[in-house]
Image (cartoon, rainbow, N blue to C red; front, side):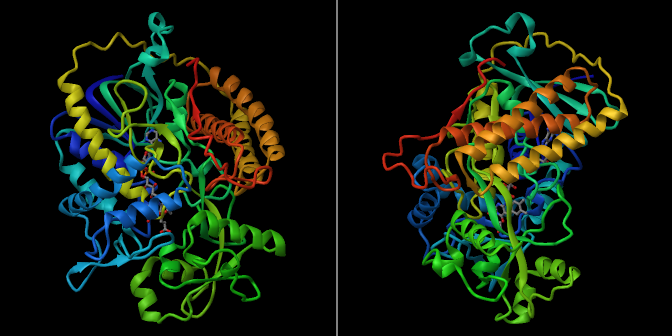
Length: 539
Ligand code: FAD
Ligand code: SIN
């Protein structure tokens, strides 16, 4: 089936929904999403959205906090845009129906690690769910947005799909939409568009232990890489310090997050014998940036041979705990822990990708007509380590900017989209072979967890690179002779992401922010490595 539209949006998290709403004011939008509409990283966001709201706070302070967390690698111009446009975008979200927690008629502002002020706008500890609810309500009512659920983008359409245009130089390529799989009919859709917004979210599922849901298989990074777009800073994977530890947690399932806001509320990290340890690592203790807290926990676990540490909030008033964190309180209670009386067992888990598809200040990628917003993009605002609650903010600020630029782009669109070939749908796969995909997928995640995690080294990276290379070749071989289905697409994508993360980590011969390696334990004093950029020159 062929679908034609002005703008294709891929993904229905905060970035995709917000972009679609803004673009629908001047163009027709087709929005495709992998599962049901609300399934996204956004839906699980707890802490909130950072923004300068308190009169005692200033843009300068938020900028400074963001730059400090980013460990010398943030793009300062982009950080300034992020921070200064933040308050307007929070207002937009409220006008679109998001109801944030208020105290005495004003937004209740929480505090999180790395922030010098209380500036986190939130909806109790279910901020993401509230934002998704509000935006989906808007999209459902909007006649200019057509949504296709259970529809997975397979690959972007560029010159490389059109035989006669295959050899055009990379620096002048266009994106004309995407091929996508309808998971109910197994039909491949050819969706052609003048502009395409990639808003496919993160890649936590590249790792065995992650706070991300199953959809987060890095599809956007992999599709953009295959299409020849520039990808940057993929080594900076953020491990959230405090995911709930459960001894019977399945590999590959989503770990429940214990929000950073719990530490902002006074939570204390303790080893199993009850001793506080963060003061040994940083004067900011529990409220140091995430890379420092996650590494401190990792160090304590390795030194002591233990599986988890504790987060202690028992010194706080029970009603106040329940009022601030009803979702976390209930989840822990369901697991047999009353957090007002007992410590919470926690471990770090893969949480967020600071790198992604390289974009400019209007979310434009290196392919004409392709925009990237939200976690899949690399705007440069996070540098080597994202400041807590700056992700949802980045998504709205740069989705808005993408919409502004797309309006201009469509107004000046003079060329026509060439004839796009239909998807070659031949191929088979026996049930015996399906199990190979499950095995390979498990293997990729374990390799990444064991060798490309919080602490890295040349030897570990080389070992990971060799193993991923083999899995990559086997997967490509299988992919070529297979009818497309969800699991093989996801395996192909997590493997491509693993390759990019390892390659970027190997390029960075220093420890900076989230990239800590035993072989180069300090940051380069001259910052000579800059951003690590990858581009597939043979798409
Ligand atoms: P997502 O919300 O992940 O949406 C991506 C969408 O793309 C989904 O709809 C998905 O189904 C779809 N998709 C993916 N691949 C395809 C494909 N191939 N075809 C079609 N559709 C596809 N950040 C903060 O700033 N504050 C917080 O408090 C916070 N808390 C968090 C808590 C948790 C547990 C997690 C996991 C993350 C948290 N983050 C937080 C990070 C933040 O939630 C995400 O970075 C942000 O929501 C990403 O938004 P997005 O729109 O880019 O992607
Ligand atoms: C959290 O609530 O701890 C998550 C915040 C974030 O990822 O920014």
